[in-house]
Image 1 (tube, rainbow, N blue to C red):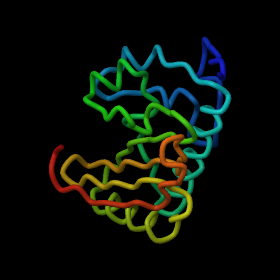
Image 2 (cartoon, helix red, strand yellow):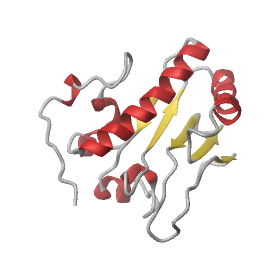
Image 3 (tube, rainbow, N blue to C red):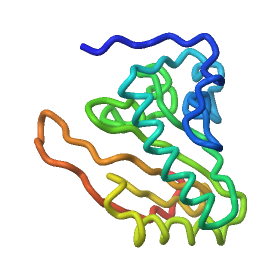
Image 4 (spheres, one colour):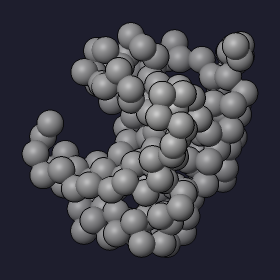
Length: 160
């Protein structure tokens, strides 16, 4: 089992030009719970992979995607009614991020950009127009299915 590293100042760990590790320990609804999140070395790498995708979006659309949910502890996941198999839990080989872009038209274009130009870099891509966010996860292989969920994409036009 991989042990988790404890960094007192995760703001000091820059992943890319625009994102630090602290950006992935965030919850719009429960920020106090997000402050208690710890990362293993492999989870830090998965955050880096997600940050690289977000940097590509920034470059393409000249806007910074705002992370609204990153890694979740099991307690935080329960609080937000997350799935027990949520990629936000960073189990197995995956990780996930939810992000917003202030301009709704750019958010829709971003969904299409990821879907069409980056299809081999994500596992799940879910666009929630009414909530104004996109959910993006890395591909993962779980012990149960032994296969990857590569390039699954949906638009969900309701709140939940």
